[in-house]
Length: 154
Image (cartoon, rainbow, N blue to C red; front, side, top):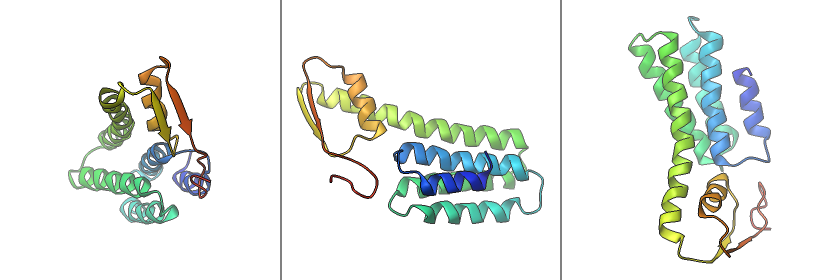
């Protein structure tokens, strides 16, 4: 998928949470590097991509954070005169780090909350869902208030 298509996808998506959107932001930088590698305008387009992603969903700060981290990786690797594969590898590592962070949060939550049998959550994010998967179903009750973009908790 082209990098500008990923920006449109992130902006219009109403089904996924912050982790998924953040991963797509990193993937936009991966697509940018693949599409424009060696082109004079790569650095300029990377800066524009950072701005587009940072502003496309202002209420989802994780997108801007992932975009800033991706831009920093790209900028640092280009200043080191890294080859294309090194840049892509570093961006893929960042993508993986975002996914692993979700798993680590879920593991920490299990360690802290496994003694409880009842849970109330206002949002069923992918991180919260991962927590409940790791926790298991041993006679637990989970109440989830309705959660959807722009109408959180309605």
